[in-house]
Amino acid sequence: MPRVLVLGLCAGYFLVLLDVTVVNVALPQINSDLQAGQSGMAGVVNAYTIVLAALLLPFGAIGDKWGHRRVVVFGFLCFFVGSLSCSLSPTITLLVASRAIQGAGAAATMAGTLAMLSESAADDRERSKLVGLWAALGGIALPLGPLLGGLLVDVGNWRAVFWLNLPVILLALVPIIVHSSRSTAPGPRDDQLPAAGGVSESSNPSRVRLTIACIIAGLLNFCVLGSLFFLTQNFQDVRGLSPFQAGLATLPALLPLPFFGALSGTISSRLGVWATSALGLIVGGVGLGLMGLTVSAPSLWALWTALVVWAIGVGVLMPAIVAAGMHALPQRPGFASGAGSTARNVGGAAGVAVFAALHDVETGVLMAAAGAAMVAAAVVCIQGQRHRVQSSTAPLTSKKPNGPVPRSRSPHSG
Image 1 (cartoon, one colour):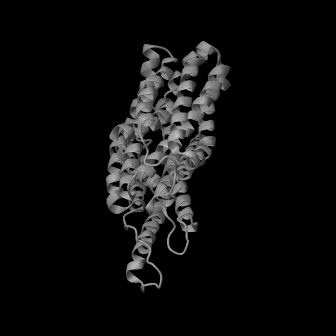
Image 2 (cartoon, rainbow, N blue to C red):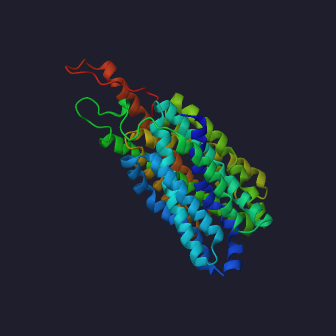
Image 3 (cartoon, rainbow, N blue to C red):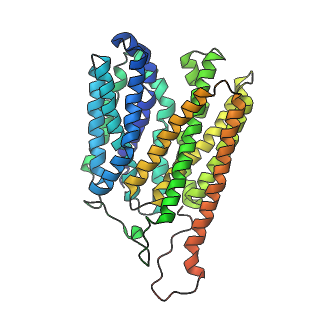
């Protein structure tokens, strides 16, 4: 796949994540300018995230049937129209409606870009690397969102937050439109054809692996967004930092994500996506436990050290578990992409709700429990890796069957 196309697809994911957080710092100015009120400001955030979560699976399924390239182009155009409408909205009602349009475009973009990368990969190793790059470049939006949003609002006004999307979308669309895909209609590659005996890769074991990948992805976002929600409040309410200082204080938890996201693809191509996921879960779980021990410490240095350990684990885990879901159902990349993205969004929303509801509980206990859940999930991933290795080597050690022997897959394919 041409690099310029890969960058264009990754830019779409970058914008989707950026618009989840970049608007938050603009809410006070939106409230002042449009008289939004608390319900209006909540609507600006929720109209985007709710529509995004609701349409991920439908757009993934549409892409499997009609082609993911069409879904991606539609998503970018819808995102462009929504962003332009947001920047010109004279009332809070129109702004909320425009954010919903953005959310629809974001759903098509998120599901379609990952599916295009997955179905264009020559094999599972290349797919792991592409997914790692996709997650790494998209992960840059997490630390950049609040800082970039604050800069745009300070230099210009809240409308500049939405103007930013317009040139990025146009630049990203060019390689996607001119790209000639390998086939004009979606269809299974040679390594996606049913195995001997008529058993599909969409069989029960594949769906079980996809389900496990989705549950772990949901757990990941539960811990990440829930913990970050608590930390930003803690930095301001307990430690007395300003909003901008609180954003800077969370950077140790965010800056390692792009680097280790890219490294995760390389590790997955050697160890397999399930083993790499287990590694990320263990490191991330340990880091989360250390956060629980240091969150109330007088000095921030101990907490920042724990945040770095946690971020390394999350950076390794995120691309690997996404790739595990895509490997589980390669003949339906849109459905797999939509299912994983939906799980991450639901997990993130649940994490924020739980951490907000239990903020009066001993925070160290809550973070330690979340860390223990991540380590426990690593055991499931290790079992999944062993099962894949046994399944792939079984034809080599078993008695030769009467019929044709199905082609075995690499034990590192995930």
